[in-house]
Length: 242
Image (cartoon, one colour):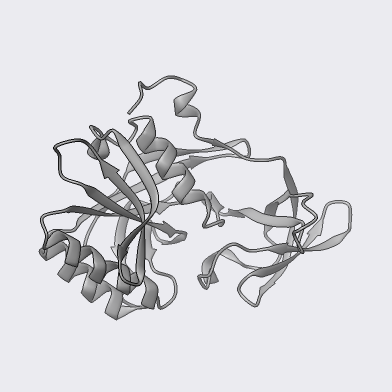
């Protein structure tokens, strides 16, 4: 969509990050963190997954601060330090990063389109993350999923049973049957994955449907990131195995 430049390659800049130690994560969307100042704050955890591997008490985490009078919680949990990588836990980041990367032609498999539209209605009760279009060309729907679970170099999705994710796979297959290109884009928000697999040990129904979807023409793209305390950038393509 646009030419690659050094500025384009900078990815997304983090807001000012505030370090602390994780006390506990609870009720899915809340996390208590002890800041270096000694103050304990409650941060919003924008992640509906279990995060079992990325929420160990005592680990160093990084928060952003938002002085918005409409926000009940001023802090948002962005990153956790794991033994082999920093990990981005905010599920709002992948869509922003993928959109930015597609717009700047950084995803080779998704170049050649003129427009990208977010949050597109794809069925009577369903929306998908992006629609790519070009005049006189096939449309391309993209559903982005955030992946933070990595064990022994293997990245897994999902980390909790996901009926919503299952519905997206069904909707994409309906679109493919109408000769529309559809892509599942798994973004691994960390740097220590060597291969991607569906998490059959967590949600076997999702894994089964994903295999069915691929047989029916759904494409899979898996990318990791480069992440530090200044920015997060789309990384390399990761192999997948079903």
